Length: 76
Image 1 (tube, rainbow, N blue to C red):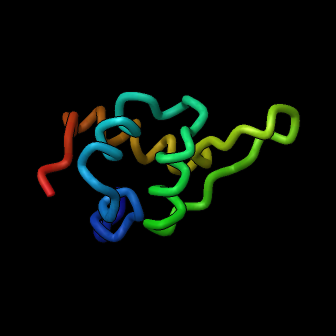
Image 2 (cartoon, one colour; image 1 turned 60 degrees about the horizontal axis):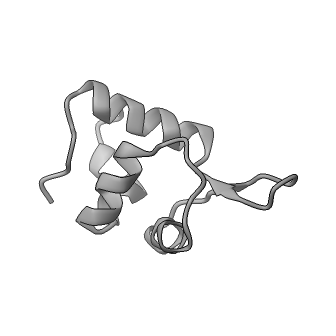
């Protein structure tokens, strides 16, 4: 993670959204999660076959790093 990790869009999401994303990083985004990610500045990718939206690979890796670091929830 970079020195400015708190600048990542993830940290601008509400607590419930952060927790869902940490628990489900590779799941298709629900409408609520999609709206929260886009509203916070994230750019989900769209599966052209299914039309579902997912976190970008780099964002999935960012969340994996947070989980490895023990961030089961963000204190903000």
